[in-house]
Image (cartoon, rainbow, N blue to C red; front, side, top):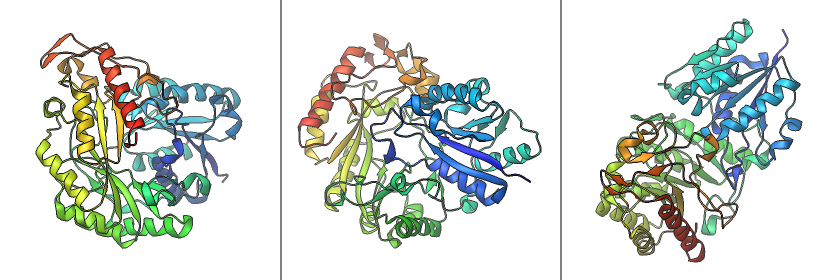
Amino acid sequence: MKSIRVGFINSSGSYNAEPFRNQPLTIIYLLTYLEKYFGEKLELSLIDLRGLPENEFVSHIPENDIFLYTLTTLDFNEAERLVQKLRDIYPIAKHISGGPHIPLFPQDGGRVFDAIALGEGENSIIELFNDIFNSELKPIYRQGPLSDLQTIPIPSRKWLPKSSVVIQGLLNKEYLKHNGTSTLFSRGCPFDCHFCSNLEKGSVRYMPYETITQEIEYLKREYGVNALALKDDNGIPVGRRFARPWLEAIGKADIKWRGQSRATGVTEDMVKLAKDSGCVEIAVGLETITPESMDILNKPLNLTEAKKYLLTLQKHEIGIRIHIIVGLPGEPENVVDSTLKFCDEFGVNSVLLSLLTPLPGTAMYNNPSSFGMKNITKNWDDFRVAFGSFDANEKPKMTFEYEKETSWGKGKSSEEIIDNYMILQEAFREGSRKF
């Protein structure tokens, strides 16, 4: 039996200034999973469009029987244009998509693709290819969260050239030249913040701890990696039950790493263990220093506890990067000055500055009036949260407006929010802070 040619297309990520900083982890996992189950029945490849202008996409895509996609909202319009072109060139090929955008807007997927997969993909992609072998492809495949991650193999990076796996600059200061890559050792988040588009809320599922160590050792051995960017929602899990074995598993592999965590709920003994496991920087999901704003968005902020956590990170010499969102409901008039003062007070190494965007899948998008919002854009290309990476003078583009009067008071105008973003951006660029 002739093998089926399968090309898994990785979107260009043209909205990112450095698209190679993030590995296409979902694609790598699913390709490894398909190889494990089907072996030589499938001729698998990863078609990486990062770094290419859109007018050159087609010339880099060889003929395949099946094209797979995993799409965020920002990727969808690009993928739709690409599918149309590929249908003209390879009219017999089938196009199948999953990813975060598809379960939110299955009508989009059904309009563009021959089949769509809703939810996590491991089980449904096996069912899907069994149906392809039997010429019984269905239009929709559904799968809930995978309860057991024991069966997930270590994701092979062989689908990419080494130059696309390993980059420098993932870590700061003396670790800037370390060879790094990104990893994901868990799925889900126990929290339900109204601005977050993560669809896997309510629980966290962890890879087997011995698998975490084995994957890091594989990356060190095969690719010379000595730095990791953990893409997990909580790089230091909340609660000793999970945090200790997680951090010990990473520590066994003797590597330097950075991740992200909540601003509250992490104890000092876990911070110390993180440091001992090789952690050199934590991005703290602070979002704002205005507790009233976080209450509105279902992320209660105990500022005293958050300050204590930052001081603990300082004490253990872990670099601090904080996430700040501009334009939150309930922001005070002096939000710019108070934010800069806070960053200086706690020796923040760098800041991830975002513009509040009611992303599809969030409570804000689904029920905007509850947050005093109106006129949310329907153009998927507009759902960006960061600006100025390509052009320092680029002005942010709002995706919504506030009502003039809201339940918490006067709603800021779009002009006010954009001005605050630009002022903060300039301050972080010109000062000792890193934007």
